[in-house]
Length: 460
Ligand code: GTP
Ligand code: MG
Image 1: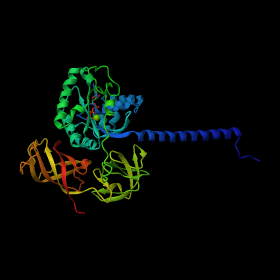
Image 2: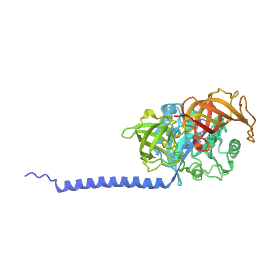
Image 3: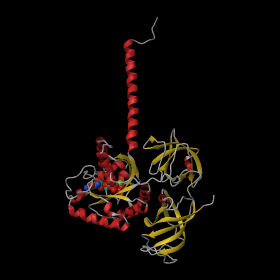
Image 4: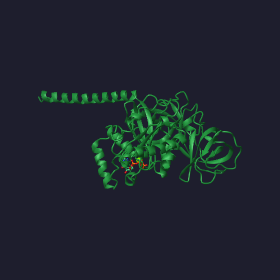
């Protein structure tokens, strides 16, 4: 009778195979678990890299990821080959972040990109912003998600137009923690005099905007060669402060307003096979848990949260500062847009019929009058808003009222009433700071910035 049982050695082999498979499987589970424990132990911070076009932001991020082992040597080698082929021979580190075809061909960043990375103390989400003036709106989206900023300034070129604009926008968007990276020191032979010259320029700029410069490290660095990023350089003996890596660990985790109602501005929406509709954004206030019913404003679409992920790991609860993706049942992709705000139905985000705001005019070629309709950037939303009333002008030094003006020009501070042209979520700065501060842009420039004093909600 033919036997169906395998030869003993065959069966042993099969057993070994199964054992090996199980072993590998268990090992993977264990590694995932340990990774979760380690990651969960570290606090999380979002950090945005800002500064003028070509200052070296993407190169800095790429080089840091390379030096910390996140990007292997062979990948950098391949990127160098590609960069050389495209006639951009020094862009290999920037290409780590600049992944779009157009970005690589033009040798500049167009939209923000994100990367995860760890220091001994923190788990960071790095947001690499574009410096080119045509893409300031993308920089604003990136900065609106950040807890801290690294302002990259070229030692060769010093403070430039978007060094100023980005630094100012960072402050307006509520980023209080800043690190300055004075890069391309190799291009000035690491000379102390050049370092001091640009350091003074940056210090004056930041002081003028309202930053406490005593707390801001200004690090002489070369991102292309790796000086003072992760490793301390012997070419800058005059500098006694922290490296970039050390400076990152001196940042503080901002307080988490968990007791406030949920506010989660949407940054992007994906449709992922097997997961359905997955909106992505950062929790600003309150908490979000699986099982929660949420409402998307201004559309009013409601759904149930099924699963929340952060850094590709499922989490039981999202709190302020968490950059998450979550899948919702009952809401279609077409019902959600960048700029929507998620809340709970018992305290939904406010859609503004009108709002009053205090603004400061930074840069307007003529004057702001009633009827002016520029673009407002608030949290992750952009909308056209019409100035319907100039309520009062204020003395910028004392805050004293100077009466009702006919116009506001560069340097003026005033209280104005604004009517959004389309429905948008706007909150009082006092209640929800990240949803109550905005920048006003027109003609490719940031013309003004402000905070929301009061909101007249749209009646449902
Ligand atoms: P945008 O994203 O377009 O605003 O530019 P960026 O600030 O990201 O600059 P990027 O990293 O793309 O670098 C621009 C150019 O500067 C590239 O040619 C880099 O090789 C060069 N560069 C960057 N860092 C350094 C540096 O430390 N030293 C020198 N000499 N060149 C650098
Ligand atoms: Mg870049």
